[in-house]
Image (cartoon, rainbow, N blue to C red; front, top):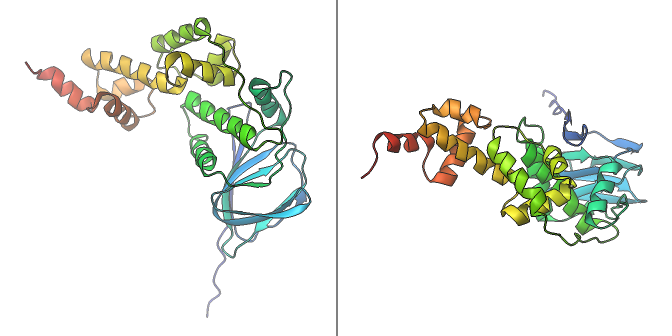
Length: 282
C-alpha cells in the first residue's frame, strides 16, 4: 500500500500599497505549529476553513471557520490546527499608528492605540466585510473602494470590540469641503483616486471624509465614482466610441466590469444602449 502524500501547505504574503505597505497573508496549513512569537503589528484575520488553536493573553483559544482572530501588537502568541484537516485563513497586519489615527477620528483627540481583549470574536457581519476586503486588496485598481472598505471594517472592529467602547463623534456638515471633491470626481472619473488623495484635498481625515461625503452626496465616494464614470461612458457611447475603448477611457478595469455596472445603472447593456441609438423609438 502506497503512503498517502501529505497535502502541501501554502502561504502567500502580499505587500499592499494601501496604508503605507500594509501586509496581508493568505495561508493554508495542515501540520504547521507556530511557537511563541510576537509581531510589532496587530493581526486581524478570519478563519475560512477548519479551526485554529492558539495561545494568547495567558490562555488557549479556538477559532472556528467564520470567526475573527485578533492579536494585539507586541503580544506573545502561538498557532496550530485544532482539527485534523488543518486550517485556512487570511489576515492583515496593520501597524499601531494606523489604529491610533482611527481612534483619533472616532473619539480621542490625541488618539489611543486600542486593545482587543478577546482573542476570538464571533461577529458574522463584520467577518463577511473583512473577507470582502481581503478578496479585493490584492487586486489591482479600485483603490478608493478598497481603502474605504478597509478603513470602515477596521473602524467598526475598534468600535465594537476594542477594550474601551467608542462611538463615532458628532458629524458636522462640511458641504464646502465635500462638494468640490464631488465635482472633481465628475470632471476626472477615469483617475484611480485613492482615499488619501481625496481626503487630503478635502482637508479631512479619511474616516471623517468617508462619513461626510456620504452625508452630503448621499452615497460613499467609491459609489459616486462609479456613477461619474458611467456618466462619461454614456457621453462617449453617444459620440460613437466603442464599448472596449469607453471602458478603458472611463477607468473600468475591464469590459465585463463596465458592462455589469452600466446595466445595473441604466437597465440595459452598453451594446443594447448603442442599438437604441442606431434605431431610436418614436
